[in-house]
Length: 311
Image (cartoon, rainbow, N blue to C red):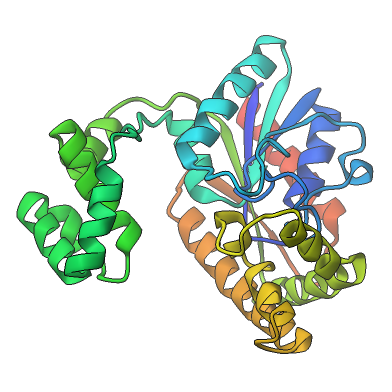
């Protein structure tokens, strides 16, 4: 039997529930692959699984960072890869479940990330961008790495500066780095499962309902407590969908209902982007839920895919 299973899909599609059921059947442990679950004290707005939902199954990569930390995909992989290896070394099944496609793909591939040095280069590039503007920075990148520059928009300040930083620190363009790492065989070879809905409106209804439930559970109080503890409004964690909108409402920039509508809309757009990302992976066995079907039918189909894969 394959001892690594990836469960991918958009927000609110039922990944946690499926992961727990399969873990119970396959002597497994769950490795979360969600860029927001890593943050402590951010439980309601991230829809982090509760102890009850975990049903006693060990879950990893949850609550591993403070909300004011600058977490990254490289940090995630550095922490998660040894956990996956430990689970399988103990003869158990590692079930990697989440909707952050970049994190999941990078973990499976074992990407060799370009370094994040603290030499001051990034700060100098940031200052240069402030002084000269992003058009000049993108033009500079075009002279160094035209392939990377062609893929980036002026508004993508972070990636433009990152590409320049990699070149000035290593002497290698980020395009060359990415091509080199893509040629490396993947670190893990999982069975991929994907969750989706035949009727996209059903997914959107689940997203809308989740926003209502978050508010009922006390999301606004959670945000107030985070801000009161000193977490900056501009922290990366507070820019997540479900937080930044209500921070604006608490600041009086809009009403709570207007913020909730914005969260619903942003979450639906995010779900579409997640599906677009995962659809590129031709190894995913899609478990598409049709109208009237419950979680039990998805679990049954997942079992069948696993049996077929093992045979």
